[in-house]
Length: 446
Image 1 (cartoon, rainbow, N blue to C red):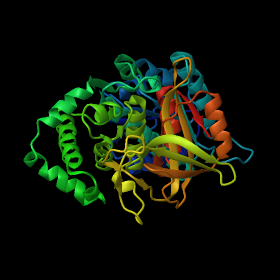
Image 2: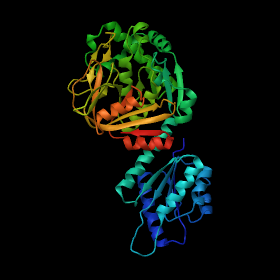
Image 3: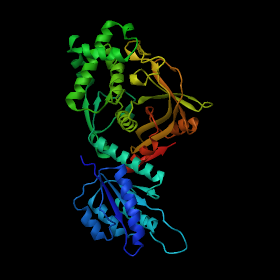
Image 4: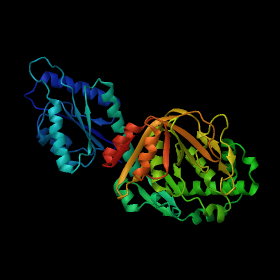
């Protein structure tokens, strides 16, 4: 899949060309430093015909339109009529304000281009950056846009599998295959949970010895779980890994209760935990958009992410506690306890994970969700994960939010947000905001 970034520096020859050439050279240097695959014209494009000729053989993931000087709307129109990809408008700071000649007039050019993009596409599907090439804020914004575009590419090559259906009353996690393909470029595959159960039952103990050794190397306390349940876990883990490998699956939304308790006799929670720890994002309760949220957050943060319910709030501490039955990635466990194994808090069957998560100075709460009218939106909040013990039986972590925690809880409830969230280790909120803009989806950032 194409990942080409195309730099389109535009201008008019009647402005101060010595200044324009200097601005071009500095901008090209920055872009080549940040994105080695960037395509550049080698000069400022001074007519719409030059823009047209330059773009003829391009197939971009992202176009960066920079007003080196003012240029009329016909320049950006050449971009619009060829490509549907995201656009960055980069306006340069006026280099000199001395009561004399306006040397660049870049900002006015960006206004002209923005008006045309918004008129052409119906909504303003672009990012705006303002400043000189040497400014740290400019560098940060360009890097964030590139990361957001990279996630778009990864989603377009993602096969996400829904294993089983959401339980009754959990419809917020269901997805239509056409809709998720149209909005995110994601291919959705569906399979019944019984197919994985039947596959697991067919494996022998000998075939699963390697899987069991892997599990024992990553978790603590598996010897306290009945042997039959441990063997059933290993078979199920082998089945999930085999299915993922055979079908090229990059993320999963798996049904968990009641089937794996009632039909198989062993929970799937620890299977999901180990998959999450090796970079296969998996949400439980068959929450497809939860799994997609995990995939995005995992790829942006470079670490396993937590998935769970907001179950408690402390207004005085400014914290929200997130919890789930026991499927958090084992590598998120607090170092004091390690990845402890226990039994499911309601069903009293193991193995499931049972630990509090490690602390972090930076964290992001995230959800790809839907408004009551069915349109998509992103929920984003940032903060930290304080050093807290396990809050409840199962897996849990606490987030101290930058924005008032009570406001976040009350506002998300009053606006009908879902009860499942992803917590990423690291601050990825700015990139997520840009991703929402590029997807033309509403962004709610607290």
